[in-house]
Image (cartoon, rainbow, N blue to C red; front, side, top):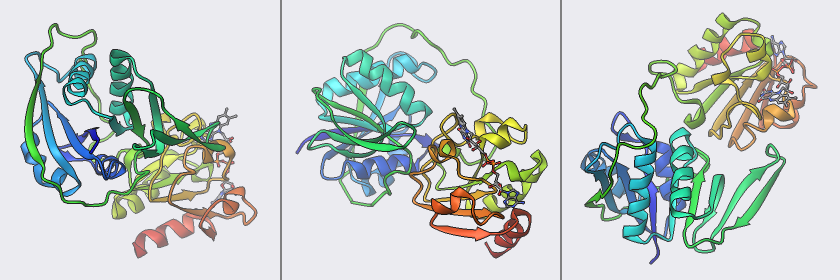
Length: 310
Ligand SMILES: Cc1cc2nc3c(=O)[nH]c(=O)nc-3n(C[C@H](O)[C@H](O)[C@H](O)COP(=O)(O)OP(=O)(O)OC[C@H]3O[C@@H](n4cnc5c(N)ncnc54)[C@H](O)[C@@H]3O)c2cc1C
């Protein structure tokens, strides 16, 4: 059986749901769950439940914690040690950073932000031209290096052994880059790109303070709040909340667009959402041609009722 390494991401020492989805993408392979510089034993049960045959705790004699290039070197050393056929991760900020570095270190091709992967055939599916087309790519390299769009694959539990292994990467130096400070967007807020549900407010939100209406709904269902570019340009929301071609790409299970017209550039960032709900007062708004469920109405009437029902 071919072996696949999966880079596991965590939040408060819990395995992120998005990493479990990546493990599901590798179902049928001998899965090595790779945990960087953390107590992997605490995650054993969860990782074994989702198919990890082996759980590798990667450390080094040097401090890996604040250096993405040392982390990438440690990952590359694990790839060599275990001779993986594939190395998969999430197309998150961390995954995008580390995988690009690993690809450079081991001199292999990388495909990022894929929505499907077939490890046996070395094929991936990913969107191009702002989501206008999906292409299937065959990757010719000695290893398949691939990051998957968060939430593109639903996690499915498949019990495996979950054997704990310690791997110490033999590294020297302090790394080329050191992270000196990390600022979180907001305590307790759900990460937009990884959220299972996203509620977005468009230009119709009319003022920054009106986002509290969407936040109230979001809190009930563990959703993240997004914005259209028109809302960002009008100063109602920061750019970090923007969904679309020049903002973030999201792929939640449920996307609720409130007062968003449905421009192609917005759609580019959320079209792979599993279910799209639109609330718009204009029954002819383009978003109604692209959504699964539509509510014709004023967001200031509909959203409070929705929040109450939720
Ligand atoms: C190169 C380029 C990149 C771009 N990148 C992005 C991007 O990343 N993300 C993005 O979003 N856009 C992007 N855009 C802009 C995009 O083309 C649209 O202008 C933008 O998405 C429109 O935002 P909107 O839907 O909020 O506003 P509008 O198009 O103005 O739509 C507002 C909608 O709200 C409805 N409405 C108004 N009041 C209410 C109410 N009270 N209740 C219910 N409905 C109401 C209206 O009927 C309307 O349909 C980009 C454009 C370009 C050229």
